[in-house]
Length: 236
Image (tube, rainbow, N blue to C red; front, side, top):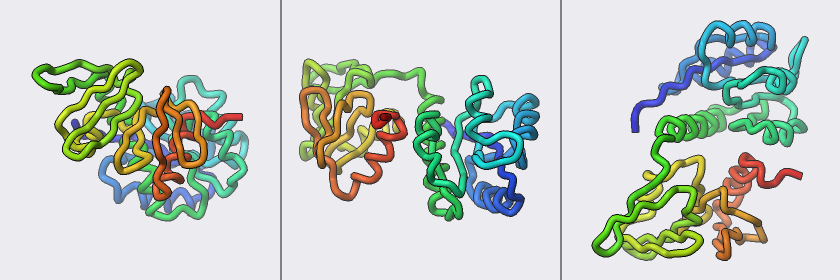
């Protein structure tokens, strides 16, 4: 995978909070902070002057909230909200933000959000490849990512399930995961990778994927629910 550099802007009306996020971002090699703003007006000016990939955006600010700005700005960059108020989380997910950080933000949580952004932009960078070649028996079979329901580890093999077939290949699930788009596939269990777009329901610790049922590990459930909310499958 080519190196990804994410140009970002930090916007927060509290100078100390903005300085703290800048300190965190400076420790992460793939984040390049091009500006720190104290309100949406300054942010608007920056966005008119240069290309920006990602906004670390506060919500409660003078003149205009982060949510109001995001709704009003045409084709905005991707956003990670940073706020002291948890009640905006649902609005954030409905606006398709990458993540939602509640202050005070720890470096561990900031790094997790930054890595999520890295995965997103890496997938966009390689977005021209929408398929994988799977070696089965004596042939290489081309399968579109969108057609894969899920992949299941079977010892030294991995089975790919589509709506109408099952393809088994000699591989590890870890190797397969590296070839799939990280934003499109999640790992609910050590033995499964699931295409988020094909999840139709969650029932207890089970994902309904097409006509199949895939288990959710108790250790993965929180992450799985978070990813699904990010993809707006739990909108009311």
